[in-house]
Length: 129
Ligand code: SF4
Ligand code: SF4
Image (cartoon, rainbow, N blue to C red):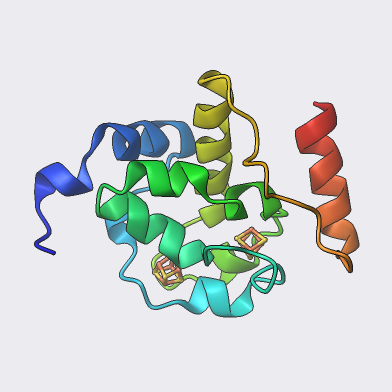
């Protein structure tokens, strides 16, 4: 697929950048974020793939990812990222867009059986408000 400014700056990508304060084009898909993510086993889409979907204009795919609800905002990815991208803010922005559209988590999004405590706390924050 050919990359173009239009694809990189689709409406959802622009909105996510505004809400998150992150620059999607900074990510060069090295995968270091996903390799260090404690929840990557439970995620349907890996964290760096969520960014890729946004970079390529696959907006519905990015919004439908259960991974955005499983992110525990632990910031491990941000600490590992050589480009200074804070993925938890991108995940949070995608959740905000879904909620503003009157949508919650996709039906298949479930808490993994052996969840780290951090995820339990973040789930409570997301679902109890
Ligand atoms: S670590 Fe940073 S640059 Fe590498 S894939 Fe993740 S967000 Fe992109
Ligand atoms: S902040 Fe979210 S995406 Fe990043 S490492 Fe933690 S759980 Fe994974």
